[in-house]
Image (tube, rainbow, N blue to C red; front, top):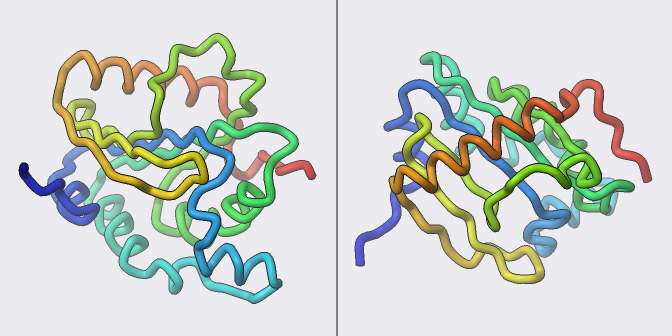
Length: 171
């Protein structure tokens, strides 16, 4: 069994584009940053996740277009309010373009069964989570049909989604 590439290796090897589709209403609810946010602790996302921020910033600075789309239930969960609150300081600050799509609007879109990253429209990193949103493992594939499905799904979501600056997470 070969070891999966690290997040840094994936971005270092990326030349043109990296897209990420998120489709869960909660991730890693035991995350200390989420607990801090719930407790009202002021946090600087770029500092809290400095390594990830630096990796994405490095990619965007060398011309890689990084886009993230999030399909969410509305009204949004507490976790999604947290994600929205840290997006400016983490994702947008690193040069990502982020959009949000209400799950109600996503009904007619053919979607893969899991969240994924797609690098340069060919390398797919599938994220597998348990029922509580804890990361179990990742799967890496360059299967052309999988890459094509993920690319089409992402673009369909992207076209319908609301830019981050215009999305307000209703309670």
